[in-house]
Length: 281
View 1 (cartoon, rainbow, N blue to C red):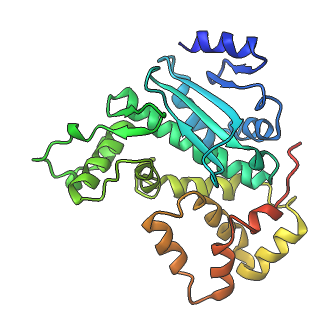
View 2 (spheres, rainbow, N blue to C red):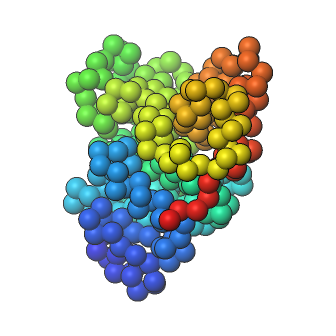
């Protein structure tokens, strides 16, 4: 399947990464997003490279990066296919292409984590996709006599960890049969037994080019957070896209006693991140 899609992509003017077995459509190829994507995937042992490794194991998965039109207000979306197994498309909005490097890093990483989770679950037959490409967890596979809360995640591979967590959510009555369940999983211990959100925060904190950030961006963050500004900004960035989860509400409410920090975090997605550096070289 990958070879067929790769040939079509090249014919259409796109680009194929045969090392990671991914495809970039013509608009994504050589874009600013593509520049950030290539920088992120080349970070040794980084989160981004680990996510991509899910697609280069020669099991027939296909991952395509596009610039397009996600649902209104979204920076990106990841979809599967009802007809083509293990076929995923990450679509990033044009305003992200025109936005800051931090905006691109967060969006690409967030969507790649979705693709990583979807591929892991689909290969294990725990997940199907509807006609729109939206993921639908196969909750019928959950055993009603099993207490999923008592299962040690350390003993499980990625797909089984996700399966156990989702079945546990079903038992607790919190499983939402739409795209939001995959956001709830972001802040549940699954990736090397830390949360995906925490892993993303650590990745941004360690690898973002803080020293060359815009002066306006750095000064405002320093004024709000002091000498911990890099960690606090990385943390705020890692929550982007998770605003509808209970975890996000707990996170932002924990800053209510510090109005400057609360305001910074509350409007981070719509204000602060836009002032970050925006030229990938």
